[in-house]
Amino acid sequence: MKIVITATKPQTDGLVDPRFGRAQYFILMEAETQQWEALENPAIAQSGGAGVAAAQFIIDKHVDAVVSGDFGPNASRALGGADIKMFLFSPEVDTVQSAVDLFKQDKLQQFK
Amino acid sequence: MKPIQIAVASGKGGTGKTTIATSLALSLAEKYHVAYLDCDVEAPNGHLFLHPEFNTSTEAVIRIPRIDKNRCTLCGKCVEVCQFHALAKVGKTIMVFPQLCHGCGSCTWNCPEHAIEEIPNPIGVLESGKARQDFHYAHGTLTISEPMATPIIRQLKRLEIPPQTAISILDAPPGASCSVVETLRGSDFALLVTEPTPFGLHDLGQMQGIVEEMRIPAGVIINRENGDYLPLLEYCTKHHLPVMLRVPFERRIAEGVARGQTLVEIYPEYRQCFLDLFDSIAVLANQ
Image (cartoon, rainbow over all chains, first blue to last red; front, top):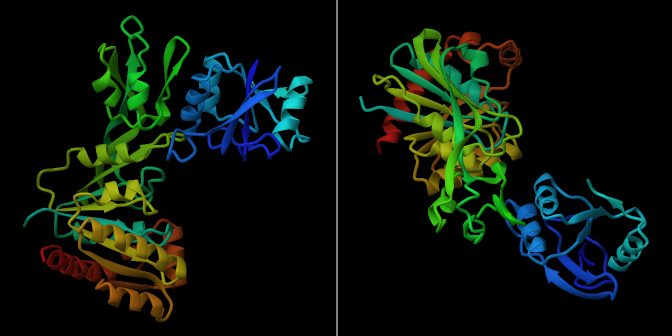
C-alpha cells in the first residue's frame, strides 16, 4: 500500500506538516516495506489552486492513501474522485514515523 | 466637454471613499450628466446613501469549461495549460473546479479534440437604474463565497451608460489589489481618500505606486483630519500629490453618515467645494 504523509522536512524523523496543498514535502512510503522517498511539493508557491495542484501531483503517483492535518474542499474532491483515501493526524502525531505507525495500527481517523 | 472618468480609491478601508464619491456625485449632478458606478462588488454600499431605483438586472458570469466525455481522450493538455489549477485529471474524468476558473479560455483553445465548450457560470448580479437627481447609478454584487471580483467589475464597467454622460464616478473597493486596478483601468483621474494615520498613509503609498504605474493623475483628499499630520503632508509634497480637499474629524459628520446622510446633506456648503474640486480635477486630468 502506497501512502503519502505531509511533512515539514524531507525525512521520516522530521515533523509532519498540517497542511496538504501547501505542505513542504510529501513523504511517499510503501507501508509494508517502509521504503520511502521525499518529494518536494510542486504546488507550494502557487498563488491559487494549490490544493488541486498538489492533489493532481499525488494522483499521478498512484497512491492509495494520504495522511495530513486537513483537506480543503477542492483537494478532497480531487483525491476522493481518484479513490485515494484521506486520513487525519491525531493529537499524538509528531514525526512522520509516528504518523506511519499509527496509520498501520489503524488508529487514524478517516477524512470524509 | 469630453467625458471624464474619476475613480475614488484609498487602499485602507473605511477612510471615506463612499462619503466622498456620493457627495461628489450629488454636487456634480446639479450641473452635469453624472453616472455613478459602485465597484466595491464585495460590499457595495453607495445605494444606502443615494437610494437608486434599479430598472435592469443582469447576471455576471465567468465562462467555465464543460468537457464532452465522448470526445475527450484524457490527454491532459487542458490540465497542463490551466494556470489556475481549475482542472484536474482524476481517474477517467477531467474534473472542473469552477471557483478556481478565471474564464481565460486556454483549455478550450488548447484542446486537440475540441472536446471543451464554455458554459456561463453565474458569480453575481449587475443592477442599474436611476438615483436621486436623475443620475445614472449601477452596481455589482458578487455572490457570497465567490472568490473572484475582477470579472464582475469588468462587466459592470461595460454596462451601457446614458450616452450624454459627462462624468463617471467609480467608487473603488478597498485594498490595493486586482479589483482596485480593474476599477482604475481607463480612469482619467484617481481621487485618493486617506486618513491622517500611519495606516492611512501606508496604504496611500500603495495606491500612489499603482496610479503611478498606470499613469493616472491623482490627488488626495484627507478625511477625518484633526490637526496637521505632518508625515502625510510631507508624503504628498514629496510625491507631487495635490491635497485637494480636507474634511475635519467631527462628530456631526459621523452621526450624519451613520444615519445614512451624505456629506453635502450634513453640510450643504460642501457642494461648492466639490464643484471646485471637479474644476481642479478637469485641469489635472488633462495635463
